[in-house]
Amino acid sequence: MEEVNLKPSRLAKRASYDSDQIYSILDEGLVCQVAYVENGKPMMIPTGYCRIGNKLYIHGSVGSHFMRSLADGREVCLSVSLLDGLVLARSAFHHSVNYRSVVVFAQAELITDAQEAWDALEAFTEHVIKGRWAEVREPDASEMKKTMVLAFSLEKASAKVRVGNPSDDEEDYELPVWAGVLPLKQVAQAPITDPLMRHQTPVPDYVANYSREK
Image 1 (cartoon, rainbow, N blue to C red):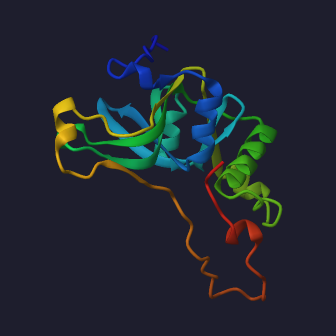
Image 2: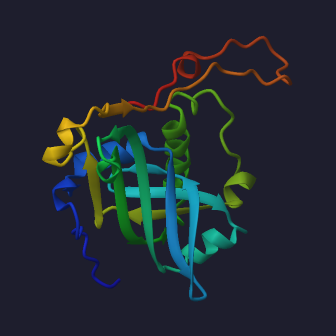
């Protein structure tokens, strides 16, 4: 794989290569964007993922063109973003957002080891909602055969983070315009029970008290 320069050309002070910070962002996110080139054309697909150690895993149908394309070992770029707030400045030019993001450059590794694939599917379920795997029916042999699991090394990963207040030009601080940060967070709503439920099963605590904050 050709050497990739992970150092940003702008606002380099926001970049981080600390693995703990990278892992923290990935562990809070739910969807990654996977960018790659297909027949000379750029493609980008959103998909769920999970992290185990220094690898990011995705899964899909063995018949998926997207999955089969990545499995050939081509170079891809994956990104995960968390939006934490709107940064409202006194000038339009200095408006911004507070965010945490991760960008990964890697090649897919097709997982052929049955135990690693199983562990990845369990980790994926627990990443989406912790506590779920222990309650649901686990995949059977037929379902596992229909599922492809790909792994991506996090060796070439970087984070970029913005926190804090707006930064205006000195003369704009005199303007009578409200400025500050409007915090944003992902909040779960009340659970909606499947109308086809055949048992009076109560909503699990991990559903009722769901949160993406780590």
